[in-house]
Image (cartoon, rainbow, N blue to C red; front, side, top):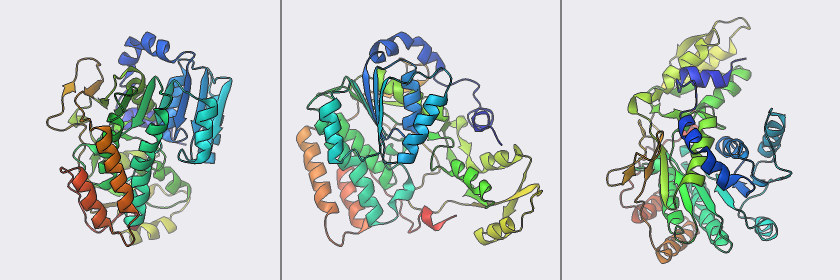
Amino acid sequence: MINIEAFISNHITFREKSFFQDDLLRYENQLRLQIEGKSALVIGGGGTIGSSFIRALLKFNPARLFVVDLSENYLTELTRDLRSTLGMRVPDDYKTYPINFSDPVFDKILQDAGPFDIVANFAAHKHVRSEKDQFSVIALLENNIVKAEQLLGKLAESPPEHFFCVSTDKAANPVNIMGASKKIMEEVIMAYAGHFPVSTARFANVAFSNGSLLAGYLERMMKHQPLSCPSDIRRFFVSPEESGQICLMACILGKTGEIFFPKLDEEQMMNFKDITIEFLRQQGLETSICASEEEARYEASMMQANSRSYPVYFFESDTSGEKTFEEFYTEGEELDLATFSSLGIIKNAPRRSMDEIRNMVGELKRVIQTPGLTKAEIVKVMTSFLPGFHHIETGKNLDQKM
């Protein structure tokens, strides 16, 4: 079985140690002072980034940890993983809840177990795949914006010492609805920057994260199915461990209203095609390039147990909302590149008034409840919120591909 952690280090990030190790060591005492003995609530904590944040957090000995996630299976695996890891100190007061953070029972948890010193929200639609039609877009907007704003309103009643909500590089010059929703989410949380400390982070693809293309390779190969990936897409990558470290530093060390991003250079971008070929090579397999999905499926069905090649279909990206490159900040954003060696900070993120935010969220809720609403009409409304939003619509989505 391939060692995924070693593969990421040797063939994707090309880093023997964490990109953020020097900053973690430099600010270790400050992190410990702000975390040790404190209570933490992690929402969406069962996924790759949320669980990585928890592992990073537990190194500094919080006294209480509550984790909320929609997936009961994710929470089960999180608990098994934490309790099976040598040296991992899980608080005595550790609880997991498979619930939605907008459910009434979540409010009861806040009332009975709160307030929490540290609150981190990772519950979000994160895939461009989630904007195939008006129904999937409505679910995305409700989760990333409407429910996020409701959470902030609840927390304002008993403010935490630190609040963090994960963003995405796709919020910089967004060309897809997911990225635009995260950009609006940033503005929503910035409106609360005067009520309690809030911060966020835009960062790269997390290699082999749950639901990602690369993680899908493991599933496909277990089922003897072909691989498929775009040939023209380049992305920045961080490891799962690094993703949690970014969020921890942004959450605990960030000043209110700051947006963090990793200081990665353009030459550190990786092409999915190159990763795919190397992934197979590390398993002693050659890439058998197929001309179509159908050919790839047929070749996979004919594979023998001792076959030394594996069928792959490479294609040029043609789905809605895809960028061929990534960026973490845009022109006009004030950058602090000196405080951390591995992280940059956007200092002047726009802060709309609370009235503006409430009017915007109210308008969004009204629009998404409109009968017969189309995806194009949703894009039009979001463009009115974000004049710089230029949605790339091709009429195709990732659910139409292998």
